[in-house]
Length: 226
Image 1 (cartoon, helix red, strand yellow):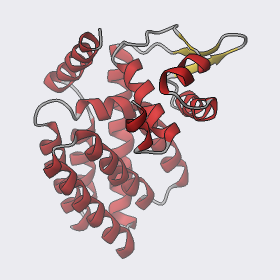
Image 2: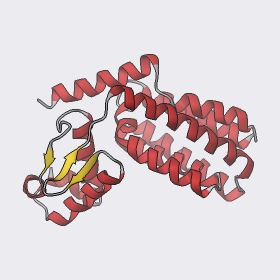
Image 3: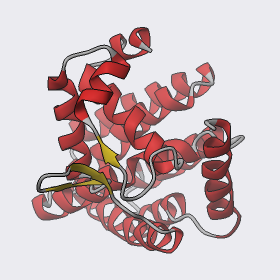
Image 4: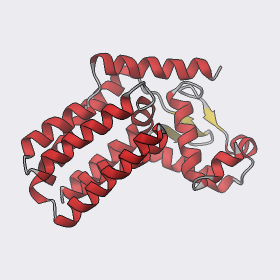
C-alpha cells in the first residue's frame, strides 16, 4: 500500500482510496473515519490524512461532526442519478459557451489533452485515463469564460469524481468515452455550440443500461472487498 501512495501526492492518493471505499460500500454511511487508524493503516503521518479528509468534505462525501470528526455521508442511487442529470446540463452549458468563446490557445490545450487521453486509453489504465479525462473536462469549463459556471461545474465534478472514475472500469467504457470526447472536440472546433452541448449532455448523463452498469459495478467492487 505504501508503494501505491508514493506514486502520487499522498493526500490526493489517499483521497482516491477513501472515496472509492465510500462509493463501493467498504465505508458505510454514518461510519466514523478515524485519523489515527488511517495513519496507522497507511503508515504515514496524520497531516496528509487531514488534507485528504478536508478534500472529501469539500466534495461532500464526508461531513465533519463536533466531537465525532469525519463521518461518511449518505448518497442514494436516486440522488446519484439526479446529480448526474444536473451535471450533464451544466457541462452542456459549458460546452455551448466554450464553443463561442474558446481561444486558439484553449483549442491547442484541448487537442493536447485529448491526445494524452488517447495514450491512456491505449495503456488500458482506466484510472490514468480518468485523470487525463478530468483535465479534458476542466479545460472545457475554463474555455466557457464564465467564472460562476466554472466554479459550480468544478464543485459538482469533484462531488461525482469517484463515480465518474469507477464507471470507467466497466468493460469498453474507456474506449467509448474517448470516442465521445472526439465528437465533443470536433463540434467545438467546428463552432457548433448546440451540437457540442448535445454531445456533452449524452456523454455525461448516466441512465438506462449505463446507470445499471454503474450500480452493478459498485456492488461488485463492494463484494470483492469483503
